[in-house]
Length: 284
Image: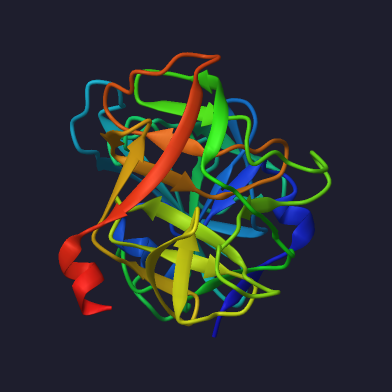
């Protein structure tokens, strides 16, 4: 059984991702990260708050010492929400869009990850406190694939990330888009996940083919909508970086490149290439 997030719920957020996380709860697309504007968390679900819990987060210089779990009985499932300092208590009823609390920048985040709500679902009789074992998550939107040749100009960034002006969103605010799976198909789908810095990714929508590719280079093998990355190195203007953050965006788009100490500034022109390990090439 999969839990589908309705279109009107997704449109509360400027970005979502099912696979762009190292957290075990995202395995096989069994959780979704939702990125709201501002510092507050609008609820993606309706129901009764069952419990809230504060947990120790991994120590990071840029992150809060604690994270928080909110459990909400939605009727058919129990929703698990993380990265929100709860402004609600057990016994309260919430509707979609209600304020759940302040977003928390937790030590579970990599330094290039913006604040977001982590959402997963459990069967009512399952242990809701465990991180893994949630139900698969689906989205009730068609995500438009955007072809990308690996080029672009830096338009925004920080110490650990930059965003390019390509591929550009064709209709900001009207639909979700993502980087196309660059295979020879009329229905290639959209790639999701941290390439290759997280253990795998996803192929959202489209023809779930046996291969996944970016900028003309094969990057992995799909099994349904889950993709196992090959042994890869992402390079920017010939220099290796940590990788590419793949997600679905509504308000704006452009490839996001991530890594510690990225030496790029706004206005720099970029050529992204992907190198496959020789052993991978020999085996395929």
